[in-house]
Every structure is written in structure tokens, then in C-alpha cells.
Image 1 (spheres, helix red, strand yellow):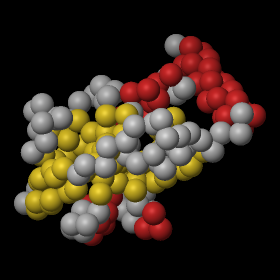
Image 2: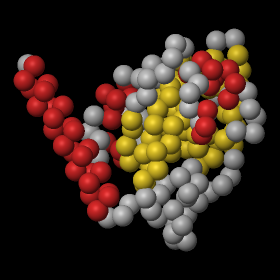
Image 3: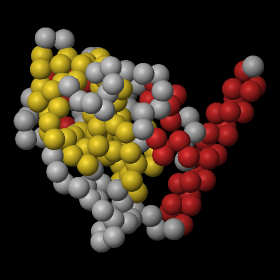
Image 4: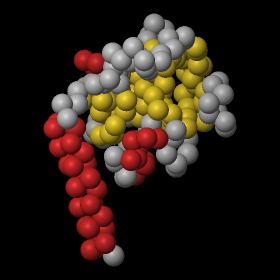
Amino acid sequence: MLIKYIIFIFFMLEISTAWFSFAKGQNRNLVHAEGLIIYPDQDALPQDIYFYPLGKDSVLTLSEVISSKLSDTSAIAYQVYFQGIHWIQPDVLDRLLELKYVKGQTSLWMFPDKSVRLTIGIIIFDNTMALDPNNPYNDQKTKMILSIGNSEYNIQLQEAPREIGVAKYLETRTFGEQ
């Protein structure tokens, strides 16, 4: 069993390495973005997630991000198609499930039972085609109410702008205590 696991890990690393080599050879513009990831409270690969970029504040712990960043009513969480990552990173679900998370409740229809998980991760986006005028974009904003414990946050949501690009890979990050 251990040998099968080692072979599987080696296979996953080979796929990732091959894709990154391909992307470099094709002059793909890859952007690493750390952020808060909001996804359904299920042990399944979500089709879409909401991604709230952290920018320069990436040293914050998950609880610090929740208490400070989500209180910013001008901040925007972007809807990102996530399920396609599994074509490049077959172990993306395992990667997502190994991240520490906090549970919450939301008002958004996208989450059928209204339960969500919040975690911090690094998503690698390919924004090579970001300025393609044929790439449709919807900048309409909606709102979501997110409840975590006794706290409630109003979050603005919108489709991810072209400049972000297409999610291609999920990296994990170790952060401090929640």
C-alpha cells in the first residue's frame, strides 16, 4: 500500500512539473494569488469558489483575515471557476481538504444547504488571455451575507475580472493558529 501511495505522489508531481514546464515554454503569464477561499461545506470538488485576494496581508492568520478583512464592506470576493483545475492537478480535492478551515453560513443560493468553509490558499491563475476582447465579462456585483459564529459580514461578489485569469492550480499555505 505504501508503494502505491509513493507512486501516486510521484505521478502527481510529474503532472504538475510537466504542466509548469509547458506553461513556461508557451510563455504563459502565471500569477500566484493568495486569498480567502469560500466554498461549499462538502468533501467534494466545488465547481465554483469565491476568492477574496489578500494582497500584502498574506501574513495574517485565518481568524485575523475573517475578523479584519471581511469587515471591509468595499472588498470584493470573485467568483472563480474551480473544478477545471483537476485536469492539471488531479489531487486538487485532496489539497483543498487538507487545508484548515472555519465553517460559516451564507445567504447565497449557490450553496444549497447554506453551509460554507473558509480557508486560505494560493491559486495560480493563467492570465495570458486576460485582455482578449472576445472574452465575455460581467462586472455586475451581488451581495452575500456570511455568518461565522456570532458575527455577520456583508460581502460583495462579482465574476472574476479578466485580469485575474483562469484558475489553474491550488497551492497550500501553512498559517498560524486560527
